[in-house]
Every structure is written in structure tokens, then in C-alpha cells.
Length: 247
Ligand code: NAP
Image (cartoon, rainbow, N blue to C red):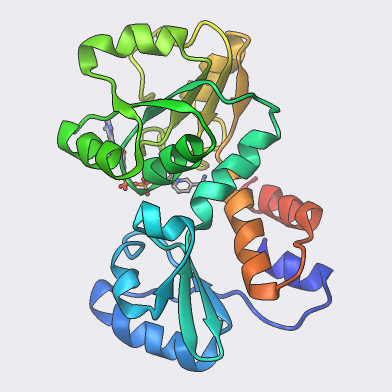
């Protein structure tokens, strides 16, 4: 996706993988400071990387996690494009702010809840580990949906987002009990491998609007690219490359 974006704009450069064990994170970021225009940061470094940066801006401040670093003449600035990237994908559905139910309380859920709350949505959060959901709600907003309230909350929500890793690498797993789905509206799954999760398959068969995990992946990538390139991203070329890569 990033390489396709560079090619489409006729820019030189390479987007490459820098596998980095936790104990080498500080050293790696020094290398970034010397030799890179920027980096994306992913699991498990999104929170700890903050300690290695000079500054953190925008959504990264409230979410407490960084997925994009920009090197501004030796100064490392951290951003979070997951939150706005999620909303970028959601905007394609033309929904008005209303109620939403988020499953999960990890890094992705934090970004999603933050994005929705900031834009006026009323957000319920359900997570297997209650303490993690509590921490999320205290930091970014929303309220907790307890296990005994889950069924009712799922049925009546117009927007359900799976931000757990259930379904990842397992096409048969669903974050919801068998047969439970919203009665109407949209279902978003952040998992993108496989692209069609069981949750999305069942939601589509039930006539619900579905959004797969590539939407947010593309959105966060478009916004990260624009931070590095300081130019509008070639969205179509990026989307084509991304869909090609996950086929
Ligand atoms: P994370 O911080 O590790 O959080 C994982 C979440 O999944 C936690 O809420 C965890 O609950 C829950 N979970 C894991 N196994 C579970 C199970 N068996 N039953 C119920 N809940 C379970 O991971 P993350 O970074 O937030 O990522 C979550 C998912 O979003 C991953 O699949 C990732 O690939 C996807 N993602 C997609 C995008 C995108 O651009 N599309 C971006 C970021 C992440 P506990 O708190 O109880 O452990």
C-alpha cells in the first residue's frame, strides 16, 4: 500500500519491515531519527514507543498510543492515525452519530472508542476482562456493557464494532454467542485476516451492512502517508494494492 502510494506520486523511497524486539526499541528509534522519514509502529510497541519520542500530537495524546512517527529534521513526533483512520472508513457509510457497541478494550478498541466519542457517538464497551474495559472508559469515554446486558445491547445497536482479536487467523471464531446479531444497522470487524470473518459472514446473511478490516487499515495508512509525504495520498492506488496483497 505505501510502496504503491510512493510510486503513484513518483516519489523515491522504500517502505520496509523493521522487525524489532522490545529490548531494541530505543536503539531502533535512534536509527529512525538518523535515517528515516518516518515509521509505523505496531503491536506490541504502540504504547512504549512514546517514551522514545520528542513529542506526541493529536489523538495519540488521548489514546495513549502511537502508530505513526514523523521525523521532522531529527525531531521524532508521534501520531495516532488508527482513530481517524477508523472514522475515515466509517464515513463511507454516511451514518449520523448515534449509539454504538464496541467489543474489546485493547489498543484498537481505544482508538475506535476515542474516534466515536469525539464525534458525538454514545458508545458502550464490552470486554472479556472488565478491568481493561474500565481503564478504557475512564481514559477515552463511553460506558461499560456488563455480560448480563450484552444480548440486549447487541440486538438494539445500530453500529457494532468487533475490536477484539477473535476471528484473527480463525475463520470459525466469532466474538458473539451463536445466533446473536444486531436487528438492523452496520457491523464492522477490524480483523482483516481473514477478510470475511464469521461475524461478517453472518451479518451479511442477516441483511446488515458490513465493513471489513481493510477499511480502517486503509484509512490509517492514508493518513500516515499524508503525514510523511505532506501531500494528498493516492487513495485508489493504495486501496488497489492493499486488496491485491490480502487476496
Ligand atoms: P490487543 O490490544 O491485544 O487487544 C485484544 C482484545 O481482544 C482485548 O480486548 C482482548 O480481551 C480481546 N480478546 C482476545 N481474545 C479473546 C477471546 N478469546 N475472547 C474474547 N475477547 C478476546 O489487540 P489490538 O491491537 O487492540 O487488536 C485487536 C484486533 O484489531 C486484532 O485482530 C487486530 O488485528 C485488529 N486491528 C485492526 C486494525 C485495522 O486497521 N483494521 C488496526 C488495529 C488492530 P481481554 O482484554 O479480555 O484480553
